[in-house]
Image (cartoon, rainbow over all chains, first blue to last red; front, top):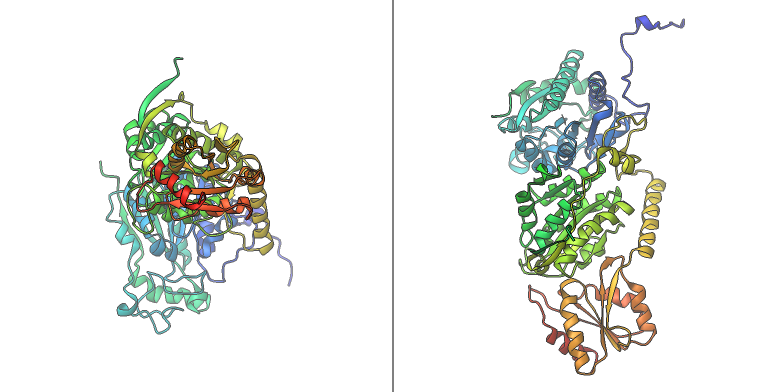
Length: 256
Length: 363
């Protein structure tokens, strides 16, 4: 095949400046890499590289700090919003965000998340909801769908045996301290663009001192779901989106 | 002296005053008896209006210690306080703080356990404070105040040591010292460090935003490569050896000619000093060694006493026998070591300590 010269003027896409050269450990078809990229672009476009402090969780994105070139603090499992609370209170001019999965945020970190949100901490949470524990090998998480097979629900999640899934974003939207809640996905190019806009809006909301913001991203876990990347995108659309519908859930201002 | 301010205050109240005056950046706490006056006093003092110090009531001790973790990870001078059951909840965070080498101060006003126990004083958390509590191989610097003045002084000392070695410091007090009122000399207000000073002091490791830095700072305790994690552990252990060599603090009372020595810290040491005087009146050559640092522990002075022929030691603690293990380690079987203690929030008096000494060692 003949070599094609890529001219600078023809470039329509490049690796974001703030994504490091570290080889990502994410599985093929995983949404994490795409969301990382969007965050890196938003930080760069908003000129926040020097004043961002990010908090990473425990789970597949435990190594998020290897990929986005800002200062990071690795939190204990579920504690990211408590960590971020203090960071933001002590550095009110900085951009502080947490990046957490559904195992981390909606199970072990429920208390920390709800109370940071209820207090109206000026932080952003990017919540990756793929309805499964990825890092530990595909166990049930609180957001696992009824009937969904996981390592700890081998016959499918049964409400009587395993309880019901819950909708984190809808629940948080009731809190006065929460002013921007949206649910997005990155399974199509159009959704990727919408998700980026949402992340930017959340960052702006936070910098404006308008309380707690969350961008939930309904995400794929092809390895955990035991599907190919293409099948996973299809499964997300056909199963997850009816339970976790996309769109803004709350856009408001802090009560006076 | 114009700066010399003397007040009559509770031990818990002076923790709050000491924090503000030594330039603390943030306090994160959760109410629990018998130490809730720490946060109550801070909220009354409103330091955010004077020094700019942040004070926040968290939803749990799990959260407050992780707020301390977050603040400390940015190089700020941050602290929390609690009592025994609350410190159990903080144990996870303490392991992470130690692993990430984050300087901070944790005050434990101990109450009786195990479980929900009682709100009365205890020294039952010696093991938890000195031998772990959280998971993994780590230590905290543990200071044991025996007076309200020491409650005050050890806040700044705790922070100084924490920053000197990048290690969490714990002030291991008890409900009685937290609640008792005594005269305390307050130090003049020190300013909090500026952001520039923090960058200068902690810029090589703290995650406070890259600013002009080329390299990002990452605060983490995750090391998946076995060699890498072992190197981290070796580094921590080397630091602990350094601390053990340089920071042992203790006080001796009438030990020079002592044939028997009581070993006690904090509240117990106050009681034991009266026992020593009573024993001396009866012609018993008794002394007292009071460890001020429980980690690092004063093994050497105890060992030397054993070597010069002290006939017996008695570890006097408000528990069923925890520090006694360290006294035994110090004397390496050369000398009998007894224990005397009460639990349930019962505080022994000097007479009962003397009686226990007679029953255990002088028979």
